[in-house]
Amino acid sequence: MDLRNIIRDIPDFPHEGILFRDITPVLHNPEALHESVRQMSEKLVGIDFDLVAGPESRGFIFGVPMAYAMNKGFIPVRKAGKLPHKTVSESYDLEYGSATIEIHEDAIAPGQKVVIIDDLLATGGTCRALCNLIESQGGIVAGIVFLIELEALNGRALLQGYNVHSIVTY
Image (tube, rainbow, N blue to C red; front, top):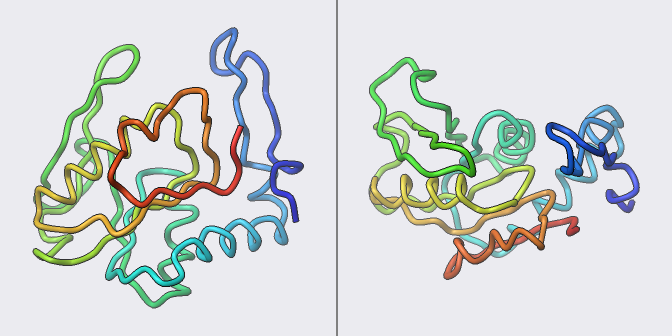
């Protein structure tokens, strides 16, 4: 199944001049959803890891079924102030401002290997911040898998040295 044919293009969203890659048709189609999780999971064959981390909200969509299928724990990565227990955080710059992501302070034990799962690699800022956050807790980033990569935005440049995979590239 070619997921590229199911991902929908939305011109001028969320701003004029942006071509948004909409994954909701993949989520709505049971076969496409299954295939996307299968292909993303396939990228982890041979990688030793303990935990799956996924940033809200679409990292949850793909990361949880992958963690479940591989009998691994899942780390929810949230925007600041959304997790109920004590957290550690990492701030990073966006095109227009900054953002902060958090995980629970007890989510990763030193030496645990973590894979990051998300829907989209654009500029790489969020994922780089998540790598920093994992490593600040003594974790090891064992791999990173995206459903979509927007190659023109060169997000891989911020992720040099990491094992990065994507399923569909534009």
